[in-house]
Length: 101
Image 1 (cartoon, rainbow, N blue to C red):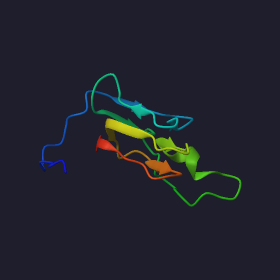
Image 2: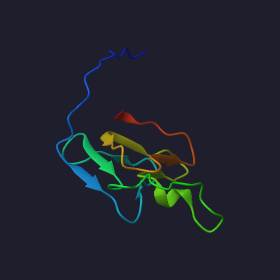
Image 3: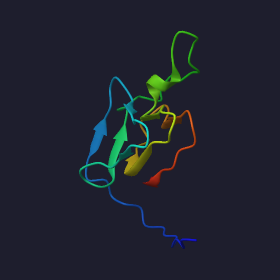
Image 4: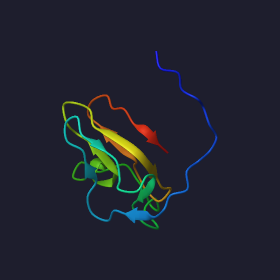
């Protein structure tokens, strides 16, 4: 068993990337780590305003930041998910997230 040390230190994101149209889709067994650790990903200002459940014609997957849609798990790693988002992570299967804040 691997021991982990708990910490209350929250990383300071070096920059924010606002996704405007599509979620970042991770392929089977793909580990996603940004070029700079802990970049903040969100949907931009106002993303949560007027949020409602998706209608039958609209997929909630379109609103998320990371879409782990493969049969085998994807793995977002070393990222920060910002407050300006309606949905953060959607996964079809079990997923592991490493150092995701």
